[in-house]
Amino acid sequence: MSVSGLLPSSQHAVLLTVEQMSAVDAAAARVGVPTLDLMENAGRAVAREVMAVHEDRKGLVVVLCGPGNNGGDGFVVARLLRQGGYRVRVACCVDVAVLRGDALVNAHRWQVLQEPVVPLTDECLDGAALVVDAMFGAGLSRPVDGDVLACIRRINDRSIRCIAVDVPSGVAGNSGEILGDAPRCLSTVTFFRPKPAHFLYPAKAYCGALRVADIGLTPRHEAGLLCQTFLNGTAVWALPRPSWSDHKYSRGHVLIFGSAAMSGAARLAMRGARRIGAGLVTASVPASALAVYGGDAPGALLVPWDSEDDALGILQDGRRTVVVIGPGLPADDETRRLVLMALGQENRTIVLDAGGLSAFADHPDVLFAAIQSSAGQVVLTPHEGEFKRLFSGLAGSRLDRSRQAAVLSGACVLLKGADTLVARPDGVVVITPQASPYLATAGSGDVLAGFIAGLAAQGMSAFSAAAAGAWLHAEVGRQLGPGLIAEDLPECLPTVLRRLLGETTL
Image 1 (cartoon, rainbow, N blue to C red):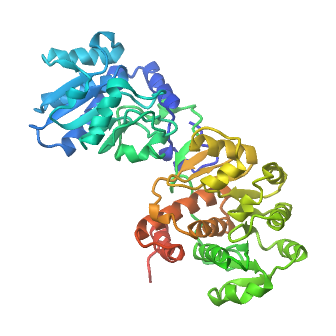
Image 2: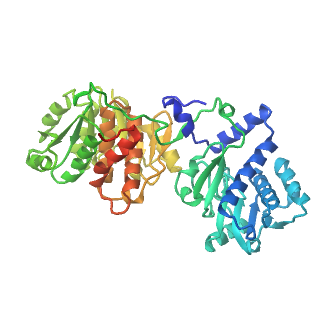
Image 3: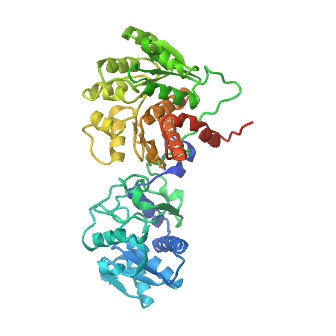
């Protein structure tokens, strides 16, 4: 398995595509792992989950089986639950006679218990206390319909507790899209490795609690796979840790351009960069706004910026190694020229947000050409609207589009959202799993830009800084919860950093 450019521990954060999971199963079979044993182990894991959440053995469990291996897992679940004293009904969306391979074997094992298999209809759910959804796995490629769709809607309409096998039926395993409809599950049991859909919306909202079960597959069965999708977290990056010999200059210098009209945006970015550990932060702003910026940031440096000559002189100071352009800036020609000027400097990491992105909505090729000819690293941080304006020709899921955008632009692309994605130009993408809806507030993205810049200033690569910044931003938002405003994010950050770095107060 290739995880080029990530930490060695990143293998623990791998998300396998549907095709890669099939390749793992095939590789295991080639080296003698019995596929029937894998199915038995999968069914046993799901049965354990049922027993953990549904201790009332008198309450009816309805197992819904499909035509493939997912349905075969369901027959194993039904048999093990029945042998454990549960009341079980099995409904299948096809006649047992059309099943093949391991699924057919396990259907026969169920029938040996003198138990029927009823048709999958709306009525098969009558009296159900809990449903096991083993109809379709992650490889579904068309919308569910007919009796399957009717069953799913009845589960949801009646709020019947449901446990999914692999993914809820109707979920596309690679994209997280909902194909027709899907049951809203109490939990989902998947096997060996999670799939992208388990962490991508809207699918994540249907999965419930995720359980990843060991069924006898090992990392050697995925050897040789080119894995490019990962779960964002400390398995894929390491935070910079200052040493006794560090000083403010060695911890990096961030330059942030701000405006007079919307000073709050750049000030929030400044606060974020300082809180996350940048040794120095300079705000370059119109002379008329210097007092506003300095009033609540006595630890920041301020330099006036009232002309392009001013901007060029400020950018040519090589000590300022990370530049943030966009928070609070208008999407106009002046901002566009400022971005191009910054990209023309040597050895810089450039973080472009808000106005720094929207200034190129009508000229995306100009931006991409400048990025690709730049000697530094670039992070683009669009929300969905900004992304669509900048990458209007891209189609597909959010995951697909973020990957394409990074390849097309030559930059690391952080696509904001409930499942914030960070993509780099070689196709690697990380999915941030724990974002809080309370982060949807003015100024939150400006703080994120500051987090990324502050991490890059301390030596992290653009991709690692963006991934770590997104994760920290989400984690702080999760901890703050209701009542959160953007100003709270930098102030809560030290608590999260202290936990991650293992620091204690003296």
